[in-house]
Image (cartoon, rainbow, N blue to C red):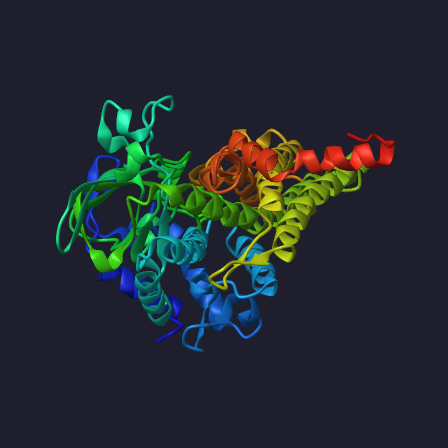
Length: 483
């Protein structure tokens, strides 16, 4: 079974015995919980589109390990064409869900771990790459959703892992046994963790020798003994508990984050891909971050397409679409959105082959892509809010709209152009609110800033990859300066 259907994916989640907490309660059935289910629907779309003949070229690939047709989210990039198709696939899914579809982190993680374990084995004589490929075959055969887990809570940012007041603020090895290791700590901001089958853990920063117990990579089942999840709050999330389908804005789809806690979790050696090799921790962080920063040139653009469409409809429904300043703002939104896409495509097309055979994006351009993502979606969101008008945040509730007595009043006074129903105008206003301020803002607005590393992380990489000395030499040559 190299390709699961959406229904099979949902059924596979029901078999997991996850330990999930949400708003102070243990959730026995995460799949059907009204706050969690929209995020699961977004992941389901990655399975559904893989069976759609119109989209299978983007959504599927041929495994270089087995020759089977597999979901692209389980694929190791074998060419720059694969890297480009990845970005196009992510834009498509953003357009279809208007939210975070969550499988990107695992895809980026396996591609990074592949090349780093290969190079680590070559230098150190370890056997991590063989272990990794065994897991990858299973991931591909079962079409698994894997959660890539990199970000630690970090505690005091001024101190390295080994000098923290609480050693568990970075995930670390607490015991090495003959049959495996025992791990304790946590991973924060874990996108789609509760909708995943397995967890792929990576170190969060480049480690030193003193921090070698924190230089750690492994896989574990999402419901392994000792792993628990605390579901993150989102703005307006309890609207999903109210019934109706207008006030949420994006009723069917969403994303989620969770704190993932490891309480003395046992990991057998066959599932360990790094265990103290601190000198390779920075390389793994750098490559994963590069892949994930590329991803934002696709997924954020797809959601941006939805937001631009919603803003244009709001202008139509407000009767303002013909105003020249409205047209200019929509053009600016499209310009900014396509700029992000151009960066995602560019870093893909300029990729190169690693020693393992997997293709890596151009790291400089990937970091430029993500640096733009920390800025441009905020301007796109601002313009969308501008075009929507204040009604976006003062609109009456769906219950008021449906009320037998005040409903007609709401319909009368919240109407825009006469040819469009008040309900349709309300739906578009709530969608814009959802993407810019509500639950989808986690996967669009705020995550644009902090996902795949904060802005300063990209600036450090741009400085490192930008080759300033070579640029100085170019200037000297043109100016006729000889050292």
